[in-house]
Length: 272
Image 1 (spheres, helix red, strand yellow):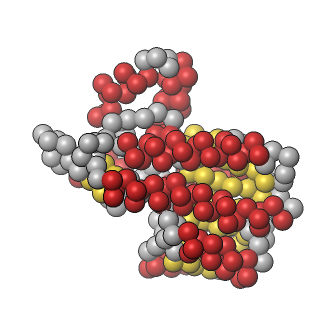
Image 2 (tube, one colour):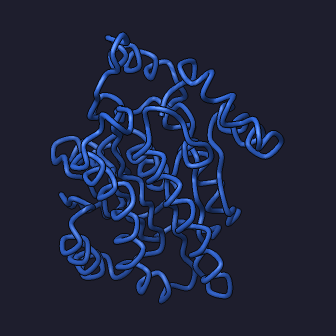
C-alpha cells in the first residue's frame, strides 16, 4: 500500500505512545482517522495533534470488549465510509513472575493484547477486503521473538499476535490486503507506567527504575516512521530499535543458547 491520501485509518491505543505517533504520521500522509482508546481526554488530545483538514473521529472503546469492537467497526463504516488501514496497537503489561501473577491479571492482559487484535482483525476485515488496497498492522513486541522472565503473560500475548499475523498474511496473500507484524524493542511509551506490577522479593524499586529508563528510549515517532515504511513496502514484519535486531539475530543464530543468554542477562534488557 503506497498511497495514504484520503484513506481511512483506524488506530487503537491512540491516546499515547506508538499509537498517537502513528496516528499523527498517518494524518500527515493524508489519512482520515478513527482514533480508539479507553482514555477519553488524551485521545482527544491526539485528535487535536492531527491535521485539521482531515476527518478525525474519536471512539472511547475497550478493545477487549467484543460487542464494543463490533459496534466500532459499524460506527467507522457509517462515519467514514470504510477502512483502508487498521493499526492494532492497544496493549498493556503485567510485570510479575508466572507464580506470582494472578489468573485475573493474565486474563486482563490477554483480553487487550490478544483478543483486542483478534476482534480488530475480525470485525474490520470485511471493510478492508472491499477497499482497492488495504493494510493491517499488528503490534507485537521484541518479546514476541524471545520469551523473558517476569513477562510470561506479555510474551504469550505477543507471540500469539505474531502467529495470528503470519497466518492471516498467508490467507490474504492473493487479496489486496497486506499484513505487517511489528516488533518494537525499547520505545518511550507509558506501557510500564500503566502496567500491573508484582515486584520480586529483594528487587524493590524495579517499577520506578524501569519507568525512568523508558524515558530515555527510542521516541515513538521513530517507531511510527518504521511502521509507515513497513506498510508502504508490504513488509511481513518490522523490527524497531537495535535491541530488536540483536535479539532476532541471537534467536536465529544461536537458537539453543538464546534462552540461556536471556535468563542470565534479562535484568539488563531495556524494557518491554
